[in-house]
Length: 451
Image (cartoon, rainbow, N blue to C red):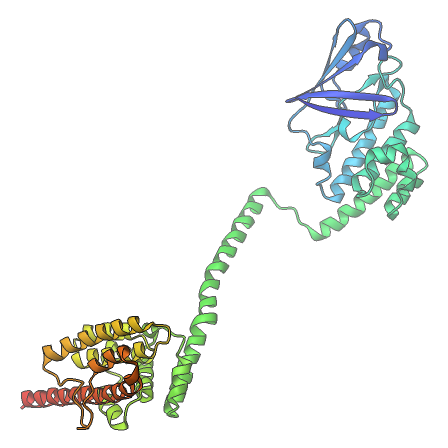
């Protein structure tokens, strides 16, 4: 159960709030009631008051007020537009007609509720000379009315502050000054009406009222257009930030290729996934990587004889990944192509990469070199290819196996490393020659078949 306390003048009204009922208990000593029948006026229903009932006990009088859940409270009024707030204040002016009756009341934000048309209803009311407030006149009503008006719009003054003495100091705006200067009720009400009509006219210039069905249609169309805009924006963003820059890099790479600037071709397409590059781009990039390999011109020419735009995309990808240093991927592609020369060349590159890796310990380097060397030798024996330890230079007798063991002999480390490098180059040359020979043999077979 909640409580609502209203303090005004010398009285404190303490309501207990239970769902849609407000209850107030007043000691009989605070009233001048001698017979409960004198309170019948409280229960009479009028448009200006919420329904009420009265119960009499030995020392207390209990007032019960039924609240309509659909009524708007003061906190709801503060969220309205200014022109609606002015209309609400104009409607409160109609309560002045009660002054001529025996019913007494007070204006307070917590003692007012409003219907959908912003017409006010008073919660608590008294009876003149019987139940507090015992009296209310036009001067009190005007004072409370002014406090209520300024409290609606002011961000620095509450109703209680204004009522307790701050009203004369509330002159921050021209509207507040005019409210303070209003000498009587009619002048104040006229000010409110003029302000309301002026504000309403301004709103009508900016807003247009439409039927609810049409508004819902507009709302649905708006959401639909927003969703459509988002959907259309996705491909635009893709083309603007992904596709167009990619096409730009691809076009520039082709220009660099025609200019034989192969290193710049590699730079332009460095950030692109090889599989996403079109076949012409794969050819340009693979060609550039082959041109950048540490091979002799004859070796490069031998390889490039098998490279064209119509080459197997996986063959082009092999040289792209090889050029980027992803030898695991390049060897996988070579195995897919079932090309032993490419596989063995991949193992040579892996051995070279391991030997040049400063992050590996001696043991790790030795184990990895031996691993790739074993795989290389297995392919050499399987396909009957020449051993990489054989070289055109008769003075060179050191092989890759000796190089792997050189990690264990510190005195011969530098010599063996240089010898291994020569062996790897010679091995690469031998591999390429074998590949070229196989290519020519395939071409001769095709010619014989045609005959």
